[in-house]
Image (cartoon, rainbow, N blue to C red):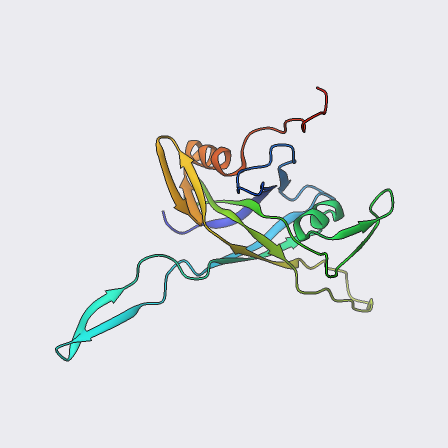
Length: 206
């Protein structure tokens, strides 16, 4: 089924300058575990290019609709751990524990890959992968406490996607977004997009 339901897991990993997975970095997984953050919403836009029509003989003669538009994903993420947010947003940190961070001229989010997992109407796994891009968060808000029960709200993050070469099996293509259906295909998608397990950096012993 093309329609999806739920949003169980978001996985992200920093990419190297050539847009391949940086296997010295952790794959961060947000799946609703207490104090480890979780996804609440996902809206993917820009998959269709704006249609351009060419007229001849007083009628539509040709339609250009190849490719994608400006692909972006709007995420609602609840209680994202500070260390993960600092990495995804490229924040400048201070102090031994990085407990102070900031936004400024040197703030530069890294390129990352991200995979959002859900399921179809029949409970089969479905995943959307944004192959490369950068996260941003435009702001924060504070509000006074009231006598109403406290309900935490998700932070709003935007992921702006770019094209990346991706190889699955024998096929290599330039893509921005991939979609997978079924457990085996979702697993293959995540491996191709996010890479394997963490490996030590050069010069670091096993």
